[in-house]
Image (cartoon, rainbow, N blue to C red; front, top):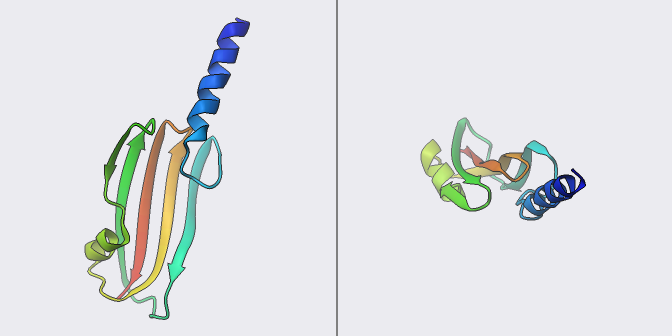
Length: 100
């Protein structure tokens, strides 16, 4: 039983090493500011997201340009990143852009 507990601890610890989030947490649901310009915030919002599973499989374009295009934004005011992750097993990352 002790060997199983040690192996489980090593697996969980190893999965946390590769977490792209700044804060290492069992469950992460946070929004962080990335950038702001002098442009007015405006009424348009664009989002782009990507997902990853076990830090082995990843899919999606969460770039600022993709988010701006999705929202029809040509003048970017703010950029935020929202993350949702569970123990490094699953992660969803969203770039949120506001502007006109």
